[in-house]
Length: 161
Image (cartoon, rainbow, N blue to C red; front, side, top):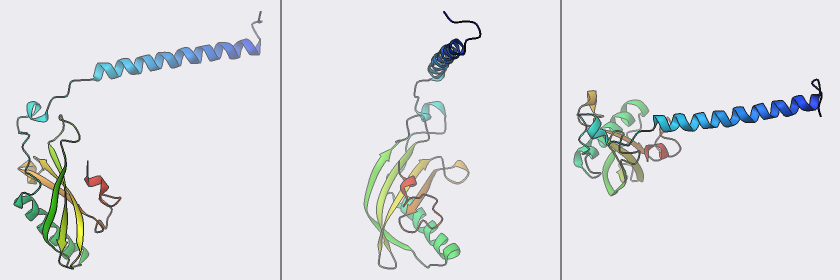
């Protein structure tokens, strides 16, 4: 039998209290997560302005946006004179890969034919309702090897699902 001032008894008591507190915290965390869980509802059923329709990867208007914005960035900011002449090997790599209850997005990749004679991989995302002031679709893109500010580093990986 341990005495009241026994250090071994105090350590055992503290260990038991710590174990009970840990089990209680784990039980509360799992209960809270279950209470906050909700069924996944497609975004177009939760918000009126989403239709779930996003342009396809080879839509000419998507390519025009990428080409014009790339030329503007390279000409005005980087002063490189690079331009995208065209695209080939277009493929979709994901549609709504982040989940149904988020903004509808289509993830694509293509090969860009550049005016310097090189070919570079382009990763791009087409998102519904992400155009100027929320009107139309928006395009976020990254040209491999030309992500100079590392916005989608490493090597455009963050532009993909």
